[in-house]
Length: 312
Image (cartoon, rainbow, N blue to C red; front, side, top):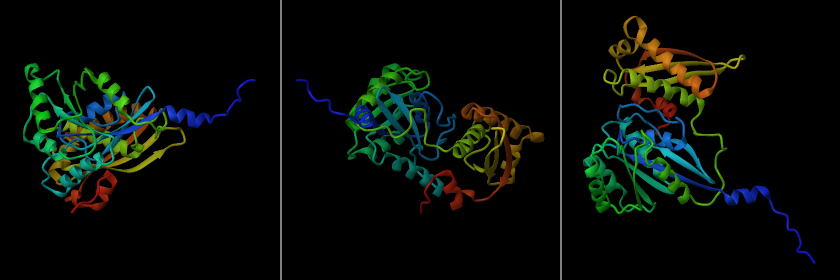
Protein backbone atom coordinates (compact mmCIF):
# COMPACT_ATOMS: atom_id res chain seq x y z
CA UNK A 1 0.00 0.00 0.00
CA UNK A 2 1.43 3.35 -0.98
CA UNK A 3 1.25 6.52 1.09
CA UNK A 4 -1.46 8.98 0.01
CA UNK A 5 -0.34 11.98 -2.06
CA UNK A 6 -1.03 15.19 -0.14
CA UNK A 7 -1.46 18.25 -2.44
CA UNK A 8 0.56 21.33 -1.55
CA UNK A 9 0.06 24.99 -2.35
CA UNK A 10 3.04 25.91 -4.54
CA UNK A 11 2.80 29.59 -3.68
CA UNK A 12 2.77 28.88 0.07
CA UNK A 13 5.68 26.47 -0.31
CA UNK A 14 7.72 29.04 -2.22
CA UNK A 15 6.96 31.78 0.34
CA UNK A 16 8.01 29.50 3.18
CA UNK A 17 11.45 29.19 1.59
CA UNK A 18 11.85 32.95 1.30
CA UNK A 19 13.33 35.42 3.75
CA UNK A 20 12.72 39.15 3.87
CA UNK A 21 13.71 41.88 6.31
CA UNK A 22 14.27 45.58 6.81
CA UNK A 23 17.73 47.08 7.32
CA UNK A 24 18.01 50.74 8.37
CA UNK A 25 21.26 52.26 7.10
CA UNK A 26 22.12 55.18 9.41
CA UNK A 27 25.16 57.33 10.11
CA UNK A 28 26.66 60.80 9.96
CA UNK A 29 26.59 62.81 6.72
CA UNK A 30 29.09 61.61 4.09
CA UNK A 31 29.67 58.25 5.74
CA UNK A 32 28.92 56.53 2.43
CA UNK A 33 25.43 55.21 3.20
CA UNK A 34 23.99 55.77 -0.28
CA UNK A 35 27.09 54.34 -1.97
CA UNK A 36 26.73 51.24 0.22
CA UNK A 37 23.03 50.82 -0.58
CA UNK A 38 23.79 51.10 -4.31
CA UNK A 39 26.58 48.52 -3.98
CA UNK A 40 24.31 46.07 -2.15
CA UNK A 41 21.45 46.48 -4.63
CA UNK A 42 23.86 46.12 -7.55
CA UNK A 43 22.79 49.29 -9.35
CA UNK A 44 22.16 52.93 -8.62
CA UNK A 45 19.01 53.63 -6.60
CA UNK A 46 20.25 56.52 -4.44
CA UNK A 47 22.00 59.67 -5.62
CA UNK A 48 25.56 60.24 -4.50
CA UNK A 49 27.74 63.34 -4.36
CA UNK A 50 30.75 64.54 -2.36
CA UNK A 51 28.42 67.01 -0.64
CA UNK A 52 27.34 66.08 2.88
CA UNK A 53 23.59 65.55 3.47
CA UNK A 54 22.91 64.71 -0.18
CA UNK A 55 20.17 62.28 0.91
CA UNK A 56 17.15 64.24 2.14
CA UNK A 57 14.51 61.61 2.81
CA UNK A 58 14.44 57.90 3.40
CA UNK A 59 14.55 55.74 0.30
CA UNK A 60 14.34 51.98 0.07
CA UNK A 61 16.70 49.92 -2.04
CA UNK A 62 15.82 46.27 -2.67
CA UNK A 63 18.70 43.78 -2.69
CA UNK A 64 18.46 40.04 -3.32
CA UNK A 65 20.86 37.40 -2.07
CA UNK A 66 19.83 33.78 -2.57
CA UNK A 67 16.36 33.30 -1.09
CA UNK A 68 16.56 36.55 0.89
CA UNK A 69 15.18 39.95 -0.08
CA UNK A 70 16.94 42.71 1.87
CA UNK A 71 15.02 45.99 2.15
CA UNK A 72 17.63 48.70 2.69
CA UNK A 73 16.36 52.02 4.03
CA UNK A 74 18.86 54.69 2.99
CA UNK A 75 18.40 57.55 5.47
CA UNK A 76 19.61 61.16 5.60
CA UNK A 77 22.79 61.77 7.55
CA UNK A 78 22.20 62.42 11.24
CA UNK A 79 23.55 65.76 12.42
CA UNK A 80 22.70 68.62 14.77
CA UNK A 81 19.67 70.33 13.15
CA UNK A 82 19.62 74.13 12.96
CA UNK A 83 16.46 74.82 10.96
CA UNK A 84 13.11 73.18 10.18
CA UNK A 85 14.43 71.50 7.06
CA UNK A 86 17.34 70.02 9.05
CA UNK A 87 14.96 68.76 11.74
CA UNK A 88 12.78 67.12 9.09
CA UNK A 89 15.77 65.28 7.58
CA UNK A 90 16.98 64.04 10.98
CA UNK A 91 13.43 62.94 11.85
CA UNK A 92 13.33 61.00 8.55
CA UNK A 93 16.62 59.32 9.46
CA UNK A 94 15.42 58.11 12.85
CA UNK A 95 12.01 57.26 11.38
CA UNK A 96 13.74 54.98 8.89
CA UNK A 97 15.12 52.95 11.78
CA UNK A 98 11.70 52.23 13.27
CA UNK A 99 10.54 48.64 12.85
CA UNK A 100 13.79 47.48 11.27
CA UNK A 101 15.21 44.01 11.74
CA UNK A 102 18.77 45.39 11.78
CA UNK A 103 20.21 48.87 12.22
CA UNK A 104 23.44 49.22 10.25
CA UNK A 105 25.53 52.12 11.54
CA UNK A 106 27.91 53.25 8.79
CA UNK A 107 31.04 55.07 9.98
CA UNK A 108 33.62 56.77 7.78
CA UNK A 109 36.76 54.91 8.88
CA UNK A 110 38.91 57.47 7.08
CA UNK A 111 37.46 60.32 9.13
CA UNK A 112 37.89 58.53 12.44
CA UNK A 113 35.65 58.83 15.48
CA UNK A 114 34.51 62.35 16.15
CA UNK A 115 31.76 63.94 18.17
CA UNK A 116 29.12 63.36 15.48
CA UNK A 117 29.77 59.61 15.46
CA UNK A 118 29.84 59.22 19.24
CA UNK A 119 26.60 61.21 19.55
CA UNK A 120 24.86 58.86 17.11
CA UNK A 121 26.24 55.79 18.91
CA UNK A 122 25.01 57.12 22.25
CA UNK A 123 21.57 57.74 20.69
CA UNK A 124 21.42 54.06 19.72
CA UNK A 125 22.06 52.80 23.24
CA UNK A 126 18.98 51.04 24.60
CA UNK A 127 17.40 50.22 21.26
CA UNK A 128 16.10 46.67 20.98
CA UNK A 129 17.02 46.06 17.31
CA UNK A 130 20.32 44.28 16.56
CA UNK A 131 22.84 47.01 15.68
CA UNK A 132 25.73 46.30 13.32
CA UNK A 133 28.80 48.49 12.95
CA UNK A 134 30.01 49.08 9.40
CA UNK A 135 33.41 50.73 9.15
CA UNK A 136 33.41 52.07 5.59
CA UNK A 137 36.10 53.54 3.30
CA UNK A 138 38.76 51.16 4.65
CA UNK A 139 40.67 51.59 1.39
CA UNK A 140 41.30 55.21 2.35
CA UNK A 141 41.72 54.77 6.10
CA UNK A 142 44.86 54.37 8.18
CA UNK A 143 44.99 50.57 8.46
CA UNK A 144 46.75 50.69 11.85
CA UNK A 145 43.78 52.53 13.35
CA UNK A 146 40.90 50.40 12.04
CA UNK A 147 40.88 47.95 14.94
CA UNK A 148 41.32 50.81 17.40
CA UNK A 149 38.23 52.55 15.94
CA UNK A 150 36.24 49.31 16.17
CA UNK A 151 37.31 48.71 19.78
CA UNK A 152 36.46 52.25 20.87
CA UNK A 153 33.02 52.16 19.27
CA UNK A 154 32.25 48.70 20.67
CA UNK A 155 33.23 49.99 24.10
CA UNK A 156 30.53 52.65 23.79
CA UNK A 157 27.97 50.18 22.45
CA UNK A 158 28.58 46.44 22.08
CA UNK A 159 27.57 45.88 18.46
CA UNK A 160 26.04 42.57 17.37
CA UNK A 161 28.43 42.47 14.38
CA UNK A 162 31.33 44.56 13.06
CA UNK A 163 32.34 44.75 9.40
CA UNK A 164 35.21 46.45 7.56
CA UNK A 165 34.26 47.40 4.02
CA UNK A 166 34.77 49.83 1.15
CA UNK A 167 31.47 50.55 -0.56
CA UNK A 168 33.36 52.48 -3.24
CA UNK A 169 35.66 49.64 -4.29
CA UNK A 170 33.39 46.76 -3.27
CA UNK A 171 35.90 45.35 -0.80
CA UNK A 172 34.01 43.35 1.85
CA UNK A 173 30.58 44.19 0.41
CA UNK A 174 29.77 40.63 -0.72
CA UNK A 175 30.63 39.25 2.72
CA UNK A 176 28.47 41.90 4.39
CA UNK A 177 25.56 41.22 2.01
CA UNK A 178 25.75 37.48 2.67
CA UNK A 179 25.63 38.14 6.42
CA UNK A 180 22.59 40.37 6.01
CA UNK A 181 20.82 37.71 3.93
CA UNK A 182 21.50 35.08 6.58
CA UNK A 183 20.03 37.35 9.26
CA UNK A 184 16.75 38.09 7.44
CA UNK A 185 13.66 36.53 9.03
CA UNK A 186 11.59 33.96 7.18
CA UNK A 187 8.77 35.46 5.17
CA UNK A 188 7.57 36.30 1.65
CA UNK A 189 9.30 38.91 -0.46
CA UNK A 190 7.66 42.33 -0.42
CA UNK A 191 8.67 43.39 -3.94
CA UNK A 192 8.89 41.68 -7.35
CA UNK A 193 12.31 40.28 -8.16
CA UNK A 194 13.03 42.95 -10.79
CA UNK A 195 12.14 45.96 -8.57
CA UNK A 196 15.17 47.68 -7.04
CA UNK A 197 13.61 50.65 -5.24
CA UNK A 198 10.36 51.98 -3.79
CA UNK A 199 10.88 55.41 -5.37
CA UNK A 200 8.39 56.55 -8.00
CA UNK A 201 9.74 57.51 -11.43
CA UNK A 202 8.65 61.10 -10.76
CA UNK A 203 10.62 61.24 -7.49
CA UNK A 204 13.61 59.59 -9.14
CA UNK A 205 13.60 62.24 -11.88
CA UNK A 206 13.81 64.99 -9.25
CA UNK A 207 16.66 63.23 -7.47
CA UNK A 208 18.69 62.73 -10.65
CA UNK A 209 18.52 66.43 -11.50
CA UNK A 210 19.35 67.41 -7.91
CA UNK A 211 22.39 65.13 -8.06
CA UNK A 212 23.65 67.04 -11.10
CA UNK A 213 23.16 70.33 -9.26
CA UNK A 214 25.37 69.04 -6.46
CA UNK A 215 27.99 67.52 -8.75
CA UNK A 216 28.33 70.57 -10.98
CA UNK A 217 27.81 73.32 -8.39
CA UNK A 218 29.29 71.63 -5.34
CA UNK A 219 30.94 74.66 -3.76
CA UNK A 220 28.85 77.38 -5.39
CA UNK A 221 25.30 76.39 -4.46
CA UNK A 222 24.64 75.27 -0.88
CA UNK A 223 21.44 73.60 0.32
CA UNK A 224 19.34 76.51 -0.92
CA UNK A 225 17.85 74.55 -3.82
CA UNK A 226 15.39 71.79 -4.54
CA UNK A 227 13.70 70.24 -7.59
CA UNK A 228 9.97 70.26 -8.31
CA UNK A 229 8.95 67.83 -11.07
CA UNK A 230 5.85 69.58 -12.39
CA UNK A 231 5.04 67.22 -15.27
CA UNK A 232 6.04 63.64 -16.00
CA UNK A 233 4.41 62.53 -19.25
CA UNK A 234 4.83 59.38 -21.29
CA UNK A 235 4.42 60.32 -24.94
CA UNK A 236 2.72 58.09 -27.51
CA UNK A 237 6.10 57.26 -29.04
CA UNK A 238 7.23 55.79 -25.69
CA UNK A 239 9.55 58.66 -24.77
CA UNK A 240 9.27 60.67 -21.55
CA UNK A 241 8.58 64.39 -21.32
CA UNK A 242 9.67 65.85 -17.99
CA UNK A 243 9.25 69.46 -16.85
CA UNK A 244 11.09 70.52 -13.70
CA UNK A 245 11.54 73.69 -11.71
CA UNK A 246 14.77 74.29 -9.83
CA UNK A 247 13.81 76.34 -6.77
CA UNK A 248 16.43 78.66 -5.27
CA UNK A 249 16.19 81.34 -2.61
CA UNK A 250 17.92 84.33 -4.22
CA UNK A 251 18.44 85.84 -7.68
CA UNK A 252 22.21 85.39 -7.31
CA UNK A 253 21.67 81.65 -6.94
CA UNK A 254 19.49 81.63 -10.05
CA UNK A 255 22.37 83.22 -11.97
CA UNK A 256 24.74 80.51 -10.69
CA UNK A 257 22.43 77.71 -11.88
CA UNK A 258 21.89 79.32 -15.27
CA UNK A 259 25.59 80.03 -15.84
CA UNK A 260 27.02 82.34 -18.47
CA UNK A 261 24.73 82.39 -21.48
CA UNK A 262 22.67 79.56 -19.93
CA UNK A 263 25.51 77.07 -20.39
CA UNK A 264 25.42 75.64 -16.86
CA UNK A 265 21.74 74.72 -16.86
CA UNK A 266 22.16 73.21 -20.33
CA UNK A 267 24.94 70.98 -19.00
CA UNK A 268 22.91 70.04 -15.91
CA UNK A 269 19.97 69.13 -18.15
CA UNK A 270 22.11 67.18 -20.61
CA UNK A 271 23.72 65.00 -17.96
CA UNK A 272 20.47 64.46 -16.07
CA UNK A 273 18.74 63.48 -19.33
CA UNK A 274 21.42 60.88 -20.11
CA UNK A 275 21.14 59.46 -16.58
CA UNK A 276 17.36 59.27 -16.70
CA UNK A 277 17.39 57.62 -20.13
CA UNK A 278 19.82 55.02 -18.81
CA UNK A 279 17.66 54.32 -15.75
CA UNK A 280 14.28 54.23 -17.51
CA UNK A 281 15.43 52.71 -20.78
CA UNK A 282 13.43 55.37 -22.66
CA UNK A 283 14.30 58.54 -24.60
CA UNK A 284 13.90 61.57 -22.31
CA UNK A 285 12.92 65.15 -23.14
CA UNK A 286 13.88 67.20 -20.08
CA UNK A 287 12.88 70.85 -19.66
CA UNK A 288 14.44 72.78 -16.77
CA UNK A 289 13.43 76.18 -15.44
CA UNK A 290 14.93 78.09 -12.50
CA UNK A 291 12.58 79.90 -10.14
CA UNK A 292 13.49 82.20 -7.26
CA UNK A 293 11.30 81.22 -4.30
CA UNK A 294 12.49 82.77 -1.02
CA UNK A 295 11.80 80.52 1.95
CA UNK A 296 10.94 77.43 -0.12
CA UNK A 297 12.17 75.36 2.84
CA UNK A 298 9.23 76.73 4.87
CA UNK A 299 6.63 75.61 2.32
CA UNK A 300 4.56 72.59 3.42
CA UNK A 301 3.91 71.57 -0.19
CA UNK A 302 7.66 71.35 -0.88
CA UNK A 303 8.07 69.04 2.12
CA UNK A 304 5.23 66.87 0.85
CA UNK A 305 6.74 66.66 -2.64
CA UNK A 306 10.19 65.78 -1.26
CA UNK A 307 8.72 63.14 1.06
CA UNK A 308 9.57 64.81 4.36
CA UNK A 309 7.21 65.28 7.28
CA UNK A 310 6.50 68.83 8.43
CA UNK A 311 8.08 69.26 11.87
CA UNK A 312 7.66 72.06 14.38
